[in-house]
Structure formats: structure tokens, C-alpha cells
Image 1 (tube, rainbow, N blue to C red):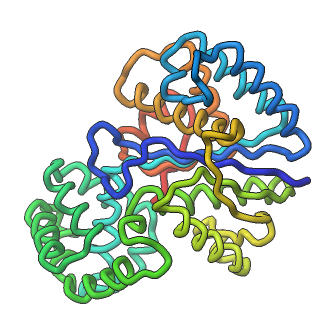
Image 2: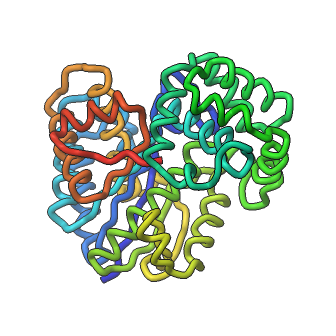
Length: 355
């Protein structure tokens, strides 16, 4: 069976990873059997027409969630999609934690360190623990300075960022690792990887969008593998990211399957499961708008959960969707320990956050 997978985002701030009003970035996929698209479109059109306002031409989830009648329509659409054997998958990143993960991946990288080897870098649990340490000890001003250094690599910025991390670090293990670091060597390689990369604009490579697309692609590919279907990928057009996403897609599409990568890193070739990649404008596509509904709904509900706000009826419905995606390995997240505990507690699940 052939599906179409529609992908859209919520919380996009580009390479700004320290926006206090947009702490999270979510990318969602709704995979729809091609044979059922006509029925789904008819259903959405009827629902849309029943509540649309004068001049309104599309479903904007961020606005509809706040209106009780329209939020009920969103619920009915998502329930209908589930009943039509559609698959939901989602990836969410906490941006502040993402910066701390970059600290670990760069400043504690064994390839540039006299006191550590590659063994430590391959332990995701240890890397998450280290990222959480830096998340706890660094303030927002530090995070902003460090984020800027990684996004726009300059040796002076790198040195300032490293000095801040080194000065704030009191854990003996991490202090020792930082002391053995070859900063100029790292900077040279990182500059080439980011600023001289021909596959993507430098401002895209270190954005949440770039890494999240890869993670979501792996979730979708794994669903295809488990359920034995192929899918086309249709992404909501993002002028800055379109070419970068296309080249990422091509890399994983030509890649051969590798059992070791699949077992240890969850990385599989997309060649067997994805038919094509294209971009479209969500303003003219109800089906792309369903991905926006999923991404925005999940992110807004999680923001309430993380800040201990009361949940409304629609939030409770979305919470059930999140739990289902967690249980079916369709939900991937990278975030701080506090939020992981909140998620596990409220969902009554044992989610696994990975870097």
C-alpha cells in the first residue's frame, strides 16, 4: 500500500535557540493511505465549513485551539484520521537543552581531547547526563553566547564560549575533559562543517529544524517498516530549509541498510520505504494542515504540562494521543530531566529521551 506523509512544524525560530517565548520545536508527520485521501478531504471540508469565519481559508491550529468550538473540530479531525488508519509521529526538541547537547558533542568530543577517547562519546546515557549538567549550571546569558558561537563559528566566539563553560564547570570529570581540549582544531573542523557546507545554509545546519527532520524521518521509516508500506514525503515549504531537507532526504535515501547502525543508533535507509520528497504550501492543502494541527496541539499541551497549568478538555485528548505515540515508538524527544520526569509522570509511561 502507498501512503502520503505530510510534515509540518510548530515553534520555528530558525537558528535562534534561546527565544524565551518559543522554548520548544516540534515537527509532526501524518501518514495517510492514498486510497483514503478523497474521503478525508471531504470530511475536513465539511468540518471546516461548519465553523469557518468570513475570509477564513485554512485551519490555523494555534488560533483554533483557543476557541472551544473549533478545538472540538480539531479533535474530530484527528479522531477521524486515526479511524482511517493514518499514522501519527512527532519529534520535539527543547532548544535550551539542544544547546547543551552541542556543548557535549563539541567541547567533550574525544576526537579533540587528550584525556578522553571515543568510548565515552558513544554512550548516549552519559552524553544526556552531561548535557543536563550544563543545562543546570549555565544561565540564559551563557546559553545565548554559546549558541551564537556554534551557529556562526568564529575562533574568538568559540574561545569565549569555551571559557564560560570551563569557568562554570566544577564537576571534576568534565573539568578534566575540558582541560584536555584542542579548541583550535575543533574550530577549524566545525567551521568547515558549518560555514563551508554546500548542502545547507549555515544558519540551517545548527537550527532545530535540521536535526529534527532527520529524527522524524527515522520515526516514519520505522513505522513503514513495521507496517510494510511505502510513502511519499510532502513537506510544508520553508524557503530557507527546502534545499537542505531535500539533500538530507537524498543522503538517507541512497544509503544502504546497516544492521549495526540500525541496532545501535536507530538509523535505517529510507530507500526501501520512501518513494519521493516534495514541498508544498500548507495554505492550500488541508492534508498538510493536519500535520500543523498535530505539531501545534502536542506542543501547546506539553507546554501546559511542563508549566503545571490546568489542562482543558482538548488538552486531555491530546495527552492521550501523546501517550499512544510514546507506547508505539512514534514520539521522539530531546529535553531536560525535569520535563522528561513530567512527561513520564503524567503519561504514566517510561519514555526514553535520547540525544
